[in-house]
Length: 182
Image (tube, rainbow, N blue to C red):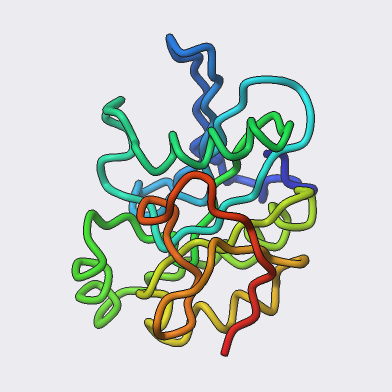
């Protein structure tokens, strides 16, 4: 993902790229202190990609371990003829579990100062925006706030509380439908 803005003077983004053994190129950007991940992209070809909006990045996202949810979203994007998946999140704060994110929200800015601009850019430049943050998007009403920033978001159905379902808990063949918050 390339943002249409220069890096602020004196600020160096933590951008790392690597090629994995699976013929993917993974790129990502973290805050200088490593507490936030602004975006992550998995690319397998040139061309447009799917924008996936999750809840928050995990602290284990740099371990190189298999990522079942990412694998499911990549499969869906490939089936749609897309060339990448760009992951952005409602909250850029890195936490392993939603409960960790909720605890951190009591004393930290778990959204992150760049999060909204990155979400807008990723959604604007992708032909498909997949809202997929699950039931915890209700934290500080963030899901509703972010939905207004998105270009025609789609989802895999909604939870009982009206939040877009998380891809890990949805059958691969589930059709995308327009996402409209309740």
